[in-house]
Image 1 (cartoon, helix red, strand yellow):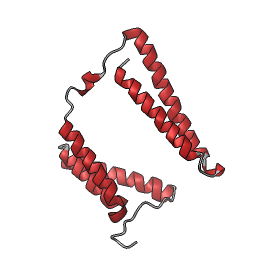
Image 2: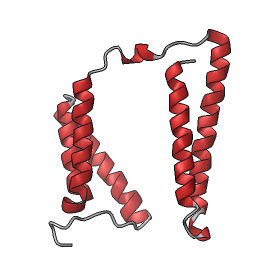
Image 3: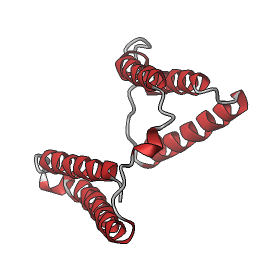
Image 4: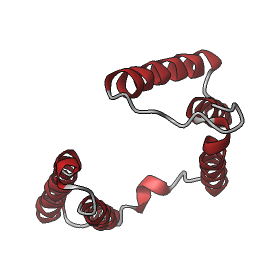
Length: 148
């Protein structure tokens, strides 16, 4: 068991509690699907916690920081700033345009090959379009700049 995994479980239970609180504010008819997702997330987090406890008895407790030995703070901060810019741009230029900019900028920053970027973006946008626009009929933000 890694000490860092304890924090992950605590955060995930916090996320479940937050979304449970928000879901209970919805009308009863709209609560079914979110409650199922929350229950699934809580169940998986519990399975992970049980697995951690079993691992602690078998192998002991480790620090868990060895996974971060190659951590680059500048890379983390850069991607975090890109995420903030992505969130800020979405209401103005829309979901698809801001997502293309974000994905392209972040993948180029992480030195991903151009053909992999194009393939990734194409696959993601086909899946998002089919799932949200066609299947679920959800309107994604189109942006105020385009006047839609």
